Image 1 (cartoon, rainbow, N blue to C red):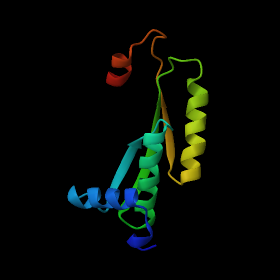
Image 2 (image 1 turned 90 degrees about the vertical axis):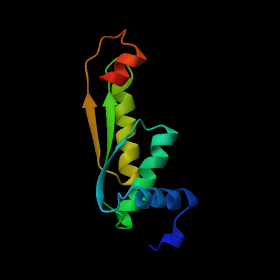
Image 3 (image 1 turned 90 degrees about the horizontal axis):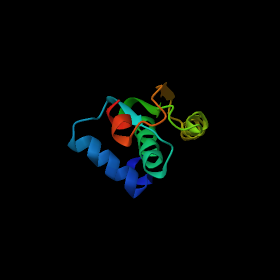
Length: 106
């Protein structure tokens, strides 16, 4: 697919890769499955298809704090699979009362 067939967001991502000398790199994306990380994962998938990146992976961190966290990870995996980005989940076993700051720093 040529660059003109990509959306404006994907084109801007390609420009970012150029500007930061990241073409032909491997790239990992922090992937929650929310709208922002999903948009980034789509851009990354398009960059791999276009030969801009050599490999990419979506990584989901399951802090284990919320009872729904395993289901969140499963939904993220299904979404990453649909987008076409390999997926990995890293499971942590933090205390149920862990703060946002602790989760970010772990």
